Image (tube, rainbow, N blue to C red; front, side, top):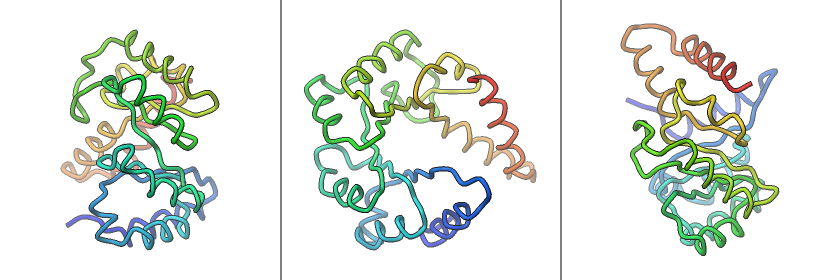
Length: 193
């Protein structure tokens, strides 16, 4: 079981017709796009109202051609930076980036505990912001309901693994995941506002 791209595009399109639509960034893997057909995928993103894409296994500079296609179609291709990205490489990625950059705060698997100090994460974040004037930079990896308030000064915070855990636990307990996600989202929002 699971969800396919056609269903995903239908959900995005339906969401964009709601009273309070928000930008939607899809995150996924390059192979799925290749199997679907790259041009068809971009066209469906545009038709359904996808705002941006994070393709975790399509690094810079290999992503340049696809990122250009996205930009031509009004879709933000979000470039990834990490603590191990060299300054020279970082500068080139920032030059090629669209309106948003995703800073992976630590070299770890998604959902792992934060192993880097807040001070070091913000130091690297501020270095990126200096180089990427006028571009949004979001931080992800290791962000939880317990430490999110420490990053309120950033352009954005990604808490994907926490949301996945909430959905999984809700379904196991036969609870409505939408209600649980709504509750957690409000709790997180209160911690950063």
